Length: 218
Image (cartoon, rainbow, N blue to C red; front, side, top):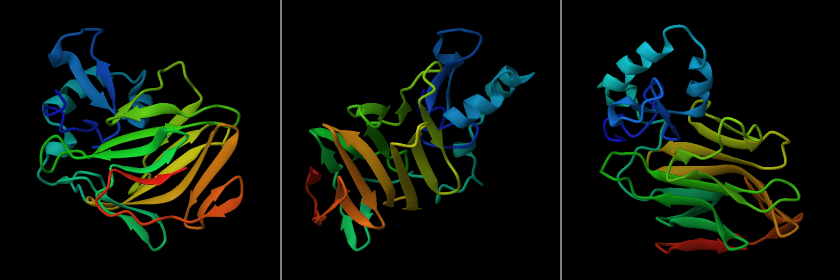
């Protein structure tokens, strides 16, 4: 079914998605992939279901004119620039914080498909929780504590209280950049991005990683 939908939102092509059913049906032909912003945009709109059926039959990511360069569709585990001057190459877990991967990057199911992205963040006073698992957005409709946005070539996952956020920039399909990270766990706050990496405000060295499973362990 992910293959049918182009491994992304059938409306905009974003590779972070939710599984949505049409007419409440559980049949495989009535399941579509939609990113959270497109889900919100279509909710309650007249004719939305019929439009989704058309989109499912011709998902935007499968159209010849669709430009994938601003989205993480690739051929292998991408490189990730963690802070300026430090690019971790083919490192599935760039940052391990309190024993949990903040970000995990996995090889696409097929060449040119969606790179697998998993994200776990913790709000102030809380432990990290999985928010994205292999591209699936996990918070449900009743959970208003987290948001996903896709402005241009950025994926932004944020807590509504502003205490946790990750901003991933798609430089090219095979090179991503960590523009900003803020997360909590174990009573500590981890921040990383263009300014470097800090734990409770104290600067940390960011080691380079070459072809290894885990980059930084904090």
